[in-house]
Image (cartoon, rainbow, N blue to C red; front, side, top):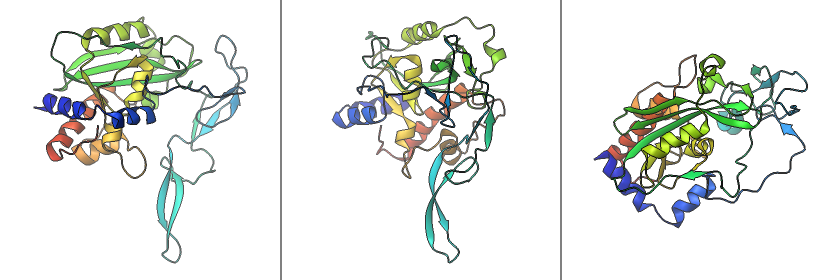
Length: 291
């Protein structure tokens, strides 16, 4: 029933509104990319300007002091009980402009989806078989060329793992982002698979009519350099409070399941299964589903 209900919900949203949502959330193939005018590499975490050599080495060694969380609006009580709204980082509850609470060995940057004509992106093929529902999650690392794919996991609608593979980035790795990616230098040291190998594995598995379920899937699709229309993004389904809610928060609230708590970082299999189970929970409790 789950696969059928997800497919029905996706079909019911194949409209201009659905395309607008994909465009607004920067899904590949649904917006026109306009490259920013930059005067160098600005660190994604602390905004400082830094330089890299052609080989991807730092020109100058410098620590990156930053906030690991995001700045969000918070409601607080003033000294007289009045309600005030302030912006605080969710990592340390400090306000905007406060010193960073985390330290990294170097600066990093992201390249915002550089292929505006999408010529290097692939699409799934139309095949003569019943469409199915898959959970997808990818882990990325910071490289000299921006964020690159380092792990891809695909699970079936029952939560069984169909693909779980590590991927060797093309450019020099600046930061393995282990706290979030779960990927380490050691785990990638003997990996030979490249982006093309991950794309080929996914291409063989799914069809153009399959539904991909995940959290903030636009990031995964960009890492895979893939265009796909039939998506269910749990960050949009459960959108609230003026911002996208984290997968770990939703999992704890809706499923009573604690995820992303390991010191070793996130687990893409755990995250993919959680996204699928969130949709099962949503479909069982509320048919008014926004996909």
